[in-house]
Length: 486
Image (cartoon, rainbow, N blue to C red; front, top):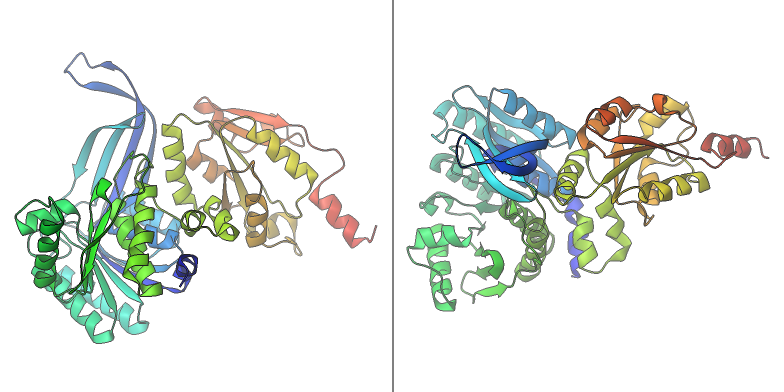
């Protein structure tokens, strides 16, 4: 099967993810001096963003790749837990399987970043095992989801934070085996017997060396390590992520193969393992091919390590690389949460963000000139587009004439546009507050004091730019002209 066909089948799959759910906080800034109080850098903060980590990042990767996903795990009853649920809702990930634990905080990793360099990390977490009552409640929620509709696959994302104890893991795998559901495990710790019966395990090299008790130095030690892991788990196969060396894999009873890394430049390895397990799982369920699935996962890993922060990969990213230009535009179209992460990465490189928005119902020369001029003002042009319900509220029944799906693809086809995000609100103020553009652009049918988001943008040093419109041309004018048969 062509690799592009494998990737396009991701949309047909439904995956359940269970594991340690985390929140990643990134605080960005610049260091210009050393503290007089101690020999440590002083970070002058310029921005902050939150993203989903651990098992939640696995779910985000699956969603970004087009799959349907449900997430199961434990969080604290705290501010971080509330923000985590909000982030899941923003990208439409089912969170009914998440339980609040009053005895622990939401696991939160706060990273301080100067330019593109991590300078410190602060962890807020408890790692003791979850209580028997919570374990039973979590298993019951999981079973109910499986009984309601059998998923195509299950991912166990174990970060050793207390969720995946041996009893829970064995019960999940037993249930999956009964139903004929594939289980892929991202393991932690030295007791891999708790994953016995899983189809695939995906440790990294350090985890493999820890459990095997020797370093992987050559093909001989690599094969020995794979045999130990398969014997411990009775898995069908093993996939070992090895950083710059790529991914090594072996199906039970076969030779070990290694696919070299394709990462051109490594900025951040945060979440790379989550990307590998997500992409491999979808690819394998779509193709039943180990080699093709590892190739796809390996390229996905190469993308995320070249980005700052907990990053994700889209179908468009993969199809761009594997040669299907027909679908490459989809990498421009991003969810609000994914776009926030993308913009943080670009901003860390010093790139200037330009934002504009509109309905873009019946694209015309005025739209084109506005977008082309907007792009000239900075490095990255993001376009917010009202979804269909929003357009209907603003323009009345009978609008939009062009569906949101078609409108975003029309705008994505323009070379001057870098990213597109749909928004459901009547105005883009919430989106502007998330993206914090350097330049906010509107056409000259607006005066600066009427531009939504102006005060917020100017509050942090951004500016509003008004671009002259093409006189006599508007979507409303064209619609009326068509309807009147002029």
